[in-house]
Image (cartoon, rainbow, N blue to C red; front, top):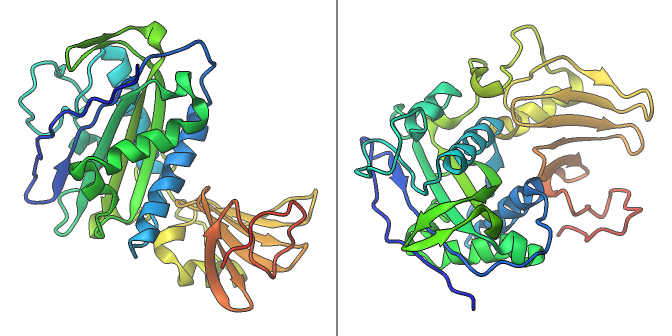
Length: 307
């Protein structure tokens, strides 16, 4: 029998800038092998951005700093066997006194949570859809979030611009009166959001938790400079100078937000954050999913054509 458990959330505010919500869903497990957590993370981002696009909102940009925070928090929840945001004074005695608190974690990776106008948020999920049916795991989690008004509000918050997702297995503990063992292969889903002035990656991005800072000596030139100027919030600062791929002749440059590429095969300049690609084509800079192609791009794999 399948069932979904949704625990009422307790909104938590920091000077009017922080909103945290909580959702859990569990179902009976079977012996199917789980899908890769990285695949689930990518699917969650894609689904959330589809939700936002359908509601006339901007898509979220994957911020490696937020991915790091999400990964740290997901692993901590698994290591300590509890399911809670544990942030900013939440009255929950099940939370260990530790560095899990979201606010300092965000500050340590360079997100200015105390900058006026900055918003951060988090959605959590706990279920064993990966074990029961990996093909529907991400969609089931996203649907449960959308069916929760508090989680839906985070997904569709127009103030948010960046996100990071982590999925980790296997959680064991008690939630909502239900005891879950490691054998149930229950996975933790953590999606972290940010937006506003303090969320924009800058040259001072910290290296805490393995997030690479921008290099003070690097610079954008020619087509990469044009792309960085066109979509500065997506590209962010460079983390190194331009290099070349000897196998295909492409030019490459890594940034805080992702990767700039000049493709020798078609002479287009593009930027990708790992989930979306912006191409400076005949109609200017246009955005599509990585699983799509524009009509003017080579498409040997027959991927869907972006509008």
